[in-house]
Each structure stands twice: as structure tokens, then as C-alpha cells.
Image (cartoon, rainbow, N blue to C red):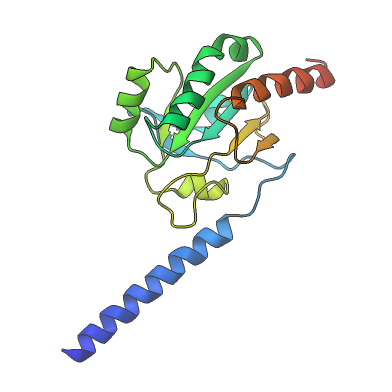
Length: 181
């Protein structure tokens, strides 16, 4: 019996440390110019979305902490309110958190959010974007502007809930102006 308890404890310890090691490896900061990590996640309606779905368009990919909390609601509503200006600039908006699709569905409906909210319930994509908190239970508030070729164009660490959308609009105008598009 003692052997079984010891073995169980040993296996649990190995699994715990190996999962943290995987997260640590995946959590390299992303740099401007490098390819954006791919993703394949369900949105609030259960539709699977991938990075390739947004090829040819600018993508404002933002990670947020939790549905229906004050800061995350402010950030989502700012993107909602700015959606026409963003789409006029050729950009799509996608939010990502570790909440499930049902939570995202309620959040999107409550605030009339016209863009996909992706359910990263295992935190794997947030980790690939170095946007998963240390304990793996919540996403960090980071945003990424991804160019039409799928490369990181701009990184916003600890993004402002009130200014993130406006910052992305300003940067899109600069980037599109310098690219002549």
C-alpha cells in the first residue's frame, strides 16, 4: 500500500513539473516580424477558427482575463464600438480567454460583440503567445496585431482596457501608410 501511495505521488509530481516545463518552453516572448503562432479554437458559436482563416487581412488578436469582468468588458466594448473603423482599415478582431464557449456566448450576447471570442480552455494557445499566467488558470491581457501574411506586426503587453483598440487603430494607420496599402 505504501508503495502504491509513493508511486502515485511520484507520478503526480513528474506530471506537475513536466506541464510547467512545457509552459515555460512555450512562453518565449513573440517579436515583431516573426510568424504568429497558429491556432485552432472554437468560438462562442462552436465554430472552429484558425489563424489561416484571417490570411490576407490584418488581425487584432487580443487575450483577456475573464468574460464579464469590469476590465475585460471595457476592452471588449471598446473593440465593439471601434469595429467599423477597424474593418475599414482591413482588420478583423478576435478575443481569446480560457473561458469556455458557453461563457463566451453569454458574454458576446450580453454586450452585442460582433467578433469571435475563442475558447482556449486548456490555455495552450495563450501559452504559445506568452499570454498565460504562471498558474495556467487565466490569460494575460496581451494583444497582437498580425499582418495579412500572418506575421507579428505589433505586440501590446499588459494592454490598456480603455486604449487598446485605439492604439491598434493608430498603429494600423501608420503601418498601412508605411506599406503603401
